[in-house]
Length: 372
Image 1 (tube, one colour):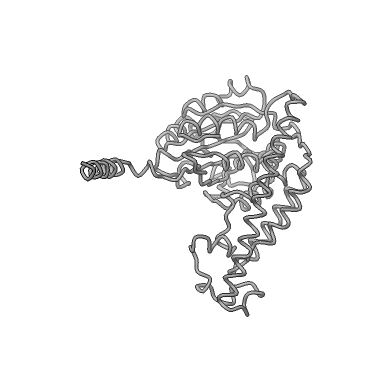
Image 2 (cartoon, rainbow, N blue to C red):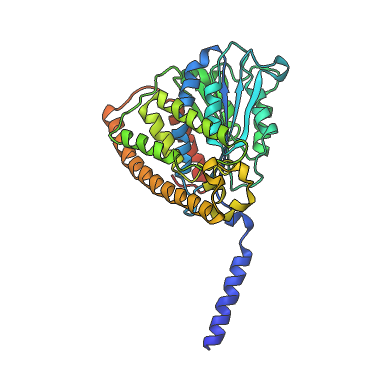
């Protein structure tokens, strides 16, 4: 009887596992395209995007589905700038989908504003056509378009662009930089509702409130320690490390809260630099150190034996794990402090960019099983 029962359990288990669709085992993933109006009046919007990128990234990084954190890919477009070719509708794809968060920050800081014609339909259409969106229904696929001119400008009808988004399973969220009712009249709400997205309005000229927390100094110190755990390799390694340091300085130049938010991102699973850092590249034996040419290693490793090289990288990995755990602990404390301060201040007025995006991300993420 025991043998028969065991066999039955085994058969049922195999049958159940065999019936699971591949999608059920998919790693959660978020594809996020940010479309920013860079015409003359949008300096405040760009400043908010630079300042609040890391808050949005951290919100997504900390979400889970079935206990697993999602992979995050971000694309960036600008539109409405006279410096962009008119034959392309004053639209530029700044970045295709990338997991390189330093590149995203670098490109945001490189954006400049100039007068232009804002064609929302055109930039949405380009984002849908030019990006490699996943075909899986389990992937959270989002467009956020922000601007302040009428949504129906240009020869490419925004309704057709939104219809194409629906066909790709992409939700378009619209952020009108101005008062709510003007955005409604100028079709920003309609643009969102066509794909089941959120219509939001923000004061793009509102100065972001940066709350200094007791943990900021220690998080900043740990960020310096964290940077020392990176082991640069390859022809592009030095440039990539310079980019990392430059984006630290950019965040630090905004406020202590911004560099704290960026450091929290750097302590997360979504901050991966396998293309230039040996610690990330050799994780789970994805790359073997002996596969790398000696001249592509950092100078201090070139004279080492294979065993010494392995010990060196493993030592840096252990240091990083320890430092990241401490950053996460302090960041959790900081988040509680900031939440209490915001409640005490009871800030009034329109949302800024990150608050608007996070509202929509929560609702749409929950729809595919993400928990925040």
